[in-house]
Image (cartoon, rainbow, N blue to C red):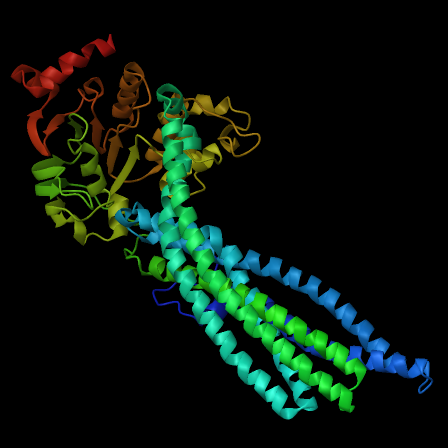
Amino acid sequence: MSIQRKEGFKLEKKTYGKKYLLLLPFQCCPFGTAGTLAQKLITGMVCTLWIVVEAGMIDGALACMEGRAEWRKLLPFLFLFLLMVIWKRMGYNLGRLLTVWGESKAGYFFQNEVVKKCSRVSYRILEDVRFQELKYAIWDKAEQIIWTMIQQTGNFIQYMVRVMGICLLLGLESPWLGGLVFAFLIPFVYVSIQSKRRIGQEFQSKKRIGLRWRAYLDGVLRHRLTVEERSIFSYTDYVQKRRDGQEEGFAKVLYQRFRNIVKGEISGIIQLSILFFLILLFRISLLAKGVISLGMFISLSRGVYDMVVFLYNGVDDTIQMMERGMEFLGDITTFAAMPEIEGTNELPAENVEEFESLELRKVSFCYPRTTKYILKDLSLTLKKGRHYAFVGENGTGKTTIAKLLTGVYDSYEGSILINGIELRDYTPERRKAMFAAIYQDSARYEDTVAVNIQIGDARHMDGGKRMECVARVAGAYDMIQALPEKFDTLLGKKAGDGTELSAGSWQKVIMARLLMSPAPFYILDEPAVALDPMAESRLYEKFDEISRGKTTLSISHRLGSTKRADRIFVLKDGRVSEEGSHEELMERRGLYAKMYESQKEWYR
């Protein structure tokens, strides 16, 4: 059951430009974003007020020491000073609270949208390297970057409020001084942002390529799937040298960026230092003339110095935020634009239509980004209620046919007709209702046994008696009853008290999952490849027994498990080279007979 949300980020196909640096945080957490901006704005105003209060305290203290005023006249300044100290501490803690809340909401909404997007794209897109990179980048970075956007945007607003406040105070001392300082700082900030952003964009484009290759080599060196071959072939030093080479190349790119930034920063430091010196020099003359008080001279001079420091550091932080933010927005734009398939999120049609026939007419297919045809002018016909088998060596197109039938790929040439209707004309709901399949790498969900079985019929996840029935038919019931919590037993290592099943027990659970589906056509794509030949043969015997009344297609390169099929298709070079029953094919003494003779020792 889906939960309807009235607020929150929704991934749409559009260009996420600069304005979304602020809009995205508002879409994810409007109250938290508004609260953070308000906290930053108030803090900026408090910093300006701090200068005035501090100046009043210094002048008042001097007046009291010289006997020109009473100490109680300092009380209003002390009270305001106390309030500002309290706000700075409370404001900081409030900002921390809003940050945690905003990050949590951003992560929630973005991860939801990534999951939905993955469910709406085709398998061809899903396995694309670029799509995978974008998916993980958005998933991993959303929580941090979205809130960094609002934090740094808020900081920038705070800096600008402080700059305007200081320029206003300078203007009260000398109108032309305040105007000149403000007129200098605006273009200075703009030029700094544009310059550093250009340097950052050049760096990011080179960094992405370098990090992609380095991440792959890191995986080779530390992933558990490569540990055995690392030990056997001792290639660690070789891979490490290649990784070191990538690191050196990345270090050169980093050094070039550092040089460019340093050049710009030296120029900026000199300009701001000269500005501070000139302001200080001019204000000394005002102090000497008695235009300003000593307290205001000291306090505002410190404020000007702080302005120079936070402009220098703040602009840099803002640039980094914009670099990361714009890169992230670019990733979102590209990710959202990935083509989708309408209806992929829909459940199988509730009213399952009868299966009568399946016909492939001159079907040819090559995988995306390749030119070699896996299937070439393949033609065959399957009829209702019969058991079929596809056999052949690896790479002959057996699994490819299953992928075409289940809609994983639709970029084939020729025609695939179900009940006389082109497969591409079927809606995803109708196609899902027609076929159910298990594969050699069928998912082992780290959830309860019940969920692992019931997921075969997502319309009825409260399987109850039907689930127990299919478990008995699949031969899994007794094994499940022996588990600690029976059907409620958690499987896998994720749960601390999860139970690990053997390969054979998992196959029984997966077979029960298949039987939960009301689809009229079952596909078994080498589901027992991890089992020994005898265990596989027993599994297929059980499948033949429990699938009576269904049309079935078994795919295997082990022929002992397929000889019970009513009709066997032998594939070679993407075509049917032989077809017939086991007995007919053995009599012909062709490719099938040779393959069977070479494997028959496995089944003794």
